Each structure stands twice: as C-alpha cells, then as structure tokens.
Length: 166
Length: 353
Image (cartoon, rainbow over all chains, first blue to last red; front, top):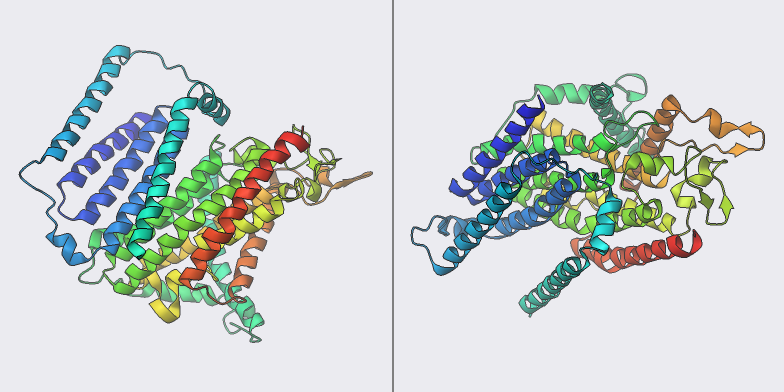
C-alpha cells in the first residue's frame, strides 16, 4: 500500500514534468508544474524530511507558482498566443541552462553512487529545534548569505516598481 | 483507525455546518437589519438552506463553451481538497487528532497557498473577465495578508517553542508540562481555565490575535475584504460561471475555510480544547471539564463563536477599496506585527526566564 503511494507520486512527478514542457498552453504548463511540485513534496515526505516537504510546497507553490500565474493573467491573451514557446534553434543562454541542468544531474548521480541505495538513513527527526540550531550554528554563513540575497531581491523589486510608476 | 473516523465525521460535520452557517448568516443579517429572515421552511426557517441545496443540486451543470474544460472541472476539487486537508493537523481534544505532526502550523500555512492556486485556476478557466478580475484581486489580497497572519502566528509559537498544534494546546491548560504565567507574574499551571489561554500569557498577544483575525478575514474573502466577489462590481467574482454541484463545492470550501481559520485562532489564542473554567479553591472546575469529550465541545464552541463574529462583521462594515486594503496591510499590519514578533522575543528572553 505504502509502495503504491510512493510509485504514484513518482509517476505523477515525471508525467506532470513531461506535460509541463510539452504542452502548448502556457497556463496548463504552470498548473502541471504545480502537480509536479506537489508530487515531489510527497516524495520528500517518504524521505522522512517533512519540514523540507512543507517548505518546498510553501516556497514553490505559494510563492513562485502564484507569481507566475499572476504574471500570465496580467499579460494579454493575444501576446501570449503569439509568444514562441517551442523555438527550434537554441541560443546561448539556453545552452547555459542546459549546462547547469547537466551539472546538477551529475552531482546528484555522484551522491547517489557515493552512498548507494542500501545506505541506512540516520533519522534525526523532523524536530524544528534541530533545524533551528543547525541553521544558526553549523550553517550560519550560508543562511546569512541567502538572507542577503533575498534582501537584495526585495530592494531591486521595490526599485523596479518605482521606476515603472514614473 | 482514529484517522479514518475523524475524516469521515469531519466531512459530514462540515457539510452540515456550512448549511447551518448560511442559515445563521441570513438570520444574523436579518436581525442586524431589523428584518425576520427565513421563517417559512421549518421551525425558525431552519430547513431553508437544505431546500436551497436541493434546488442547487438539481440545476443543470453548465460549462461555458470557451472555458478550459479540464481546469474548470479541476478548480473546485482543488479548492475544496486543499481546505479539507487543513483539518488534518487540528487537535479536537487531548486524544483526538488526525495527525500530530511536528510541523502542524507550518503545514496549515502551506495549505492556504494551495487554495490560492485553486482560486486562480477557477478564475482563468472560466474565460470570463469578471472571474479573472475576481481571482486576481483575491490572490493579491491573500498573498499580502499571509504575511501579517504568519508573523502573528510566529509571535505565538516563539513563546511555545513548537509548531505542533497539539503541544500548543497542551501548554495552555492544566495538562501543561511547563509552567504557565498569567501576564508573566501569576503562576496558573494548576489553576488553568481562561487565565492560562495564550492571549492572557503576555499582553501583546491580544494584539497578535487582532492582527491574525483581520488577516484571516482577508484570507477567507470576507467583508470588509470581499472585493474578490464584490457583487456590485464583479457580479460574483471568481465563481461567476459555476453552477450546480461545482458551485456547491466552491461554496462549501468558502465556509469550510472560515471554520478552518477560526479553528486555528481558537487553538493558537483561545486555548484550543482547554476549558474556560478555572480551578478555584476547592472547586476543581478545570479538572472536571477537561477530557476527550469536553475538549470537542470547547473547541467547537470557540471556533463557532469566531465564525459568528465573522458573520457579524460582514453585516456591520462596508467594503474596503483595493488601495485602502493594501495600505492597511503593508503600512499598518505588517510593521505592527514585526513589533509584536520583537516583543515576543524580549518577553521570552527576559520576563519568562
């Protein structure tokens, strides 16, 4: 029963991701991405990291996806249908994106082979106390760097909207 | 086993509650406006909404020709599922909780954002300008008001040091393992009752409740923040094209959402399943009225009173304009909630130590 649920989530993640990149309707591709993120959250619960699962749902669905749909809704339908979604020729920035994807996949596979499928999981619990203490001691520098990046993004957004007003 | 039992009972309860809430809404509005409301169907018009729902279910299920049919069908399902999922981590009594996970309140905040996506789906799929405008307004308001709501919740969980809703309830009554102080000076761990509730544990938490309550009104699209479905401007907002059963599902989700945010408020600020009666001298009222069945009674009473408050507010205040709504959120509530979070930290570090 539990295995069945796992395979359902795995299938949903892959099928939704494939649909998201193949469909011609941009809004459907965004909602397919929602299904994909939701399924990945489910898989994260299976990996015994429920805090990450919920954080994933909150950031990707509650933040990024909603902003994407918002952008689509505010743009005109005509300009959306004219937009070229499936360009045959690949430009430079697309090569860079492809390179980043391949690099991330290689790193992922490296860790997969490093630890193998039979490595026992050291479950430390999903207690927020452990996560909080780890973030503010062992991983303080990355945590602060990410906060700085977010602050920069905030200030930039405020600047952009103000420019548009004038 | 408890999981299946609670989910089935809850689904039935929400359906009956939604019907009674609509009836109560019409009755309360009638009393406020000096009318009598529904009186013909059943005693005091109690069967009015049952009659309405039977009429609604018989209606033809219409899908607009140019609508995105799959998304149009998926939207009500997604909205209702999201709201119903929220009830999984709500404790009903010291023993009845579907899922006592360590990240309960964080999970609830994530659930609200899934509901937002469902509203967007409904607005887009309808292919109607009023529906689209309604859902854009709805999202703008919900994602803005999520921030003060989350900060007000943060102020509470900073004091309790846990995200588990069952433990938050525990720490507000006589079953608490920690010591509880009434406004920081009077120990009430053994007295319990109304004195041990969150809003009386620190002076700033009453303000935190007010912020949370205002934000929750906005998240449910209730007056004075009902601009997403403002009848005079947008016909009915994002659900204007929906009929029959699909409309029923959206309507049910709206009332279930009201109940969900009231439940969260009851758990976080009003002691959850804890009794309001304190142990006074030899009258151990709190000991008598704490338990599995009493818990269900208390939490439902608290949540339903908050729903009644929402109804009362709807028929008392006029609707906000969009810019006034955003001004209230970004210039008043968010700075105030940051101050409250800061005050919570100070209280935890210096007063409770």
